[in-house]
Image 1: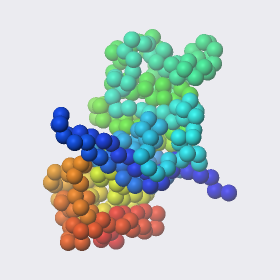
Image 2: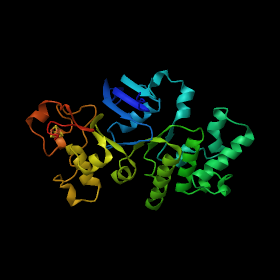
Image 3: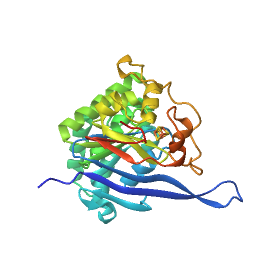
Length: 318
Ligand code: SF4
């Protein structure tokens, strides 16, 4: 019998009612539109796209913080809304972009890392102390920081504390939202390597949200590219990043990665404004910025085209 993916989304939609201006009428903003994807145990799935693409809303839904307006999210084969809230917070933990704002400044490192154990009533005081010591060692922090406060630590050390706290209750899945973008370049690689080794040692699964394609290239097994709430391309990282099929993915790569002549990318990179999500373009939503757009793109939304283990939502995807 094949095991269910750890996480699966089926046609997930999330809308928000927003009002523009004090007296404007309420309108519906489609933040996530029909997302279908799955994450196998031990995999790293990267969600990429510009700000406003819907990846953070999707991540908040995966954490159970925002319910879908429609569609289903399954965690370990069970509908997410049927999973007990305490069980879900034990099994799914977030790692945020800015460790400083996510750590209580009045608590010591020991108390921050032990907090999830206290909340869940795990272990005696002695057992928690030993667990905290093990966790600090696991994330490469010296024992001397145990009684430090967050402001006494470097940015990289703070992110290590946040990771130790996330690991305290042995989660299966970490939702990492831009986990290195607030850090110096030299520290970013250390944190990414730490996440990689923890994944191998503990069998963790990651959903990684990043606008940095170099980070994605370093970490991901699979990549889902989002644009205006939709997944426009998804597949194995090697394929999406080396042989992209969707013009948006190609433009993102051309904009953010060092040009690689072997890719044969004709696109000059991303141009044009990101559309107003309250007034998305008709047809293919990427058409106003797409160098390949034709009449059919302005008229008709493209269907999903699958090819082997990947898919792209473009009329002309090979
Ligand atoms: Fe570009 Fe048309 Fe494909 Fe949309 S469907 S990405 S506009 S070529």
